[in-house]
Length: 315
Image 1 (tube, rainbow, N blue to C red):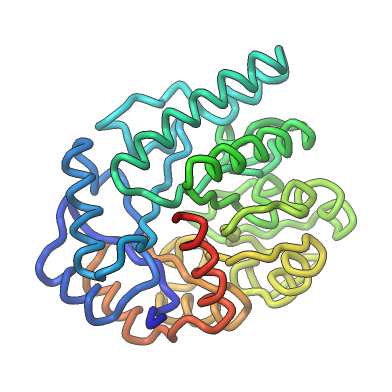
Image 2 (image 1 turned 45 degrees about the horizontal axis):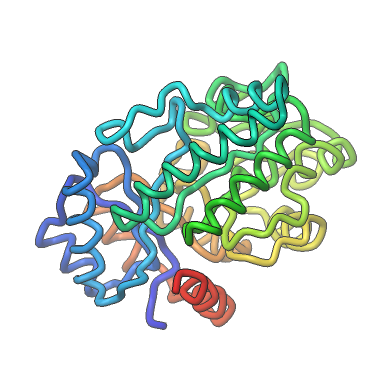
């Protein structure tokens, strides 16, 4: 499988000729879409078809970041502003059966839209634990302050997406709820003890059965004081792979976020060197995509194997 270890992004609601050429030439592992890329169902369907026509792959990974609530990319198709993960967490904690049923039906309906429009990966659930100090960038994107609620609803989400042949991407491993900083804007340093993190924040990701996970751009000071998780061998190999027993593909969070360096090529390369299998670029700039792809290595044998497993899952 001749692919680069990058998930990239595009600018508008259709592929430009330059974007088509770049995708055909450089063969990024996948494409992530955002609200800027979506007008309506028919347009989105045509867009995903055109991407797959360029790459000549009917199973080509096309990803959406559709959490519901504040983070909804489908607003031009369906209004999900009310349906944050916190909404479903509160509902479940008031009435478990009703909460499970309502959440399940919601997920099935979202999956139907994703299937219809050609999306085969959705970057949910958010498994970050809500705390008093949690920054609003997570806030109601978290199910709950309760680890049991988070794990239970997170598993429901992963299971339903699996049934619908949509891959999930639990995030932000190994945990963003312990941070009081918006990592889109600046670097976060968390001073919680190793023991406390393992028992709480990290535990939400223990033994999860998803094809993919997404990292956090946070420094966990007691584990690796020099590198954010995305760039930390100690976190990716020591915590995510060994302690949390994660067996799938690890995707970085967006390498253009301000919590990392201003050098996008460096951010991608270091993420891959540190143990991420795929780097993620969300900026939508053709120039930046081209620059990163030109310098990004091809996927390794482990990523090829796991990608083949993902394709078999879709069939």
